[in-house]
Image (cartoon, rainbow, N blue to C red; front, top):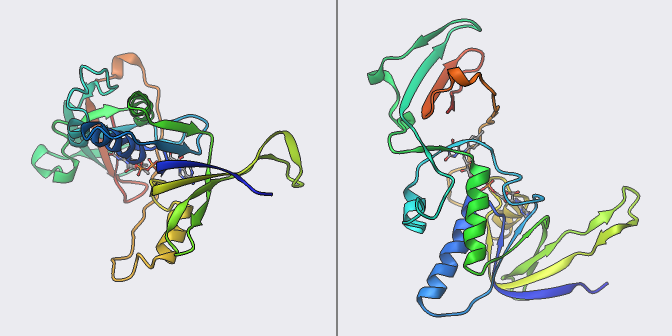
Length: 247
Ligand SMILES: Cc1cc2nc3c(=O)[nH]c(=O)nc-3n(C[C@H](O)[C@H](O)[C@H](O)COP(=O)(O)OP(=O)(O)OC[C@H]3O[C@@H](n4cnc5c(N)ncnc54)[C@H](O)[C@@H]3O)c2cc1C
């Protein structure tokens, strides 16, 4: 069955911090040079932010560059880091608190903010839409499309509403082609299309191999009287050797 297609100047895969900030920046540049362009973002989560880790310590330099007025624009970036503490856990019950001078430099968060990255992405999506970007949540880029000369032509979204037996349900939505002059892949690390592109265009040749670690994040509800706004606690040691942080 022939698929329907739509044409854009730019298609961006993934509405994470990188895809959304790229969408905003492209539109800002187009407006500065008085050009009308079409930019579309597809996001596989049911809504923007649905697949974004909920908590993060944010270094605001990129946000300062993208939206210098982010504070007056109401960005959900309010809780400034006020202190970093670092513990070496020796067992389930005990820990040693490291003195300030021994706290590793990369874990200093002066000038940073504690945010919900999902909320930051929702806010970035609002800014992007305000600049004229079209965002389609609930659509997965399932396939890379190529021109005859081998260059990237765009992506095809996946079919939706197909039963386990392969039959179309009432909710069936067919696959659709999104063609673009430029396609940006902002799927996050180990994106399945990104892996195909690395292979197709031999992008890893002569590069250091990528390194990955497993991160586990928990959201804790704590008694209000124990909450200290702006406090970041780093931990290392028992039961894993990796470090973690929370704010
Ligand atoms: C446990 C953990 C803790 C972290 N803590 C911090 C922190 O405190 N501070 C900090 O600065 N960074 C932190 N990071 C790193 C931060 O999460 C990433 O650097 C950042 O999310 C990368 O943004 P991104 O837009 O490239 O990708 P992502 O945030 O991964 O966003 C990719 C988006 O693309 C969508 N997507 C993927 N594939 C497709 C597809 N085929 N079609 C459509 N949509 C697709 C996903 O649903 C997602 O919304 C942490 C990471 C982890 C794992």
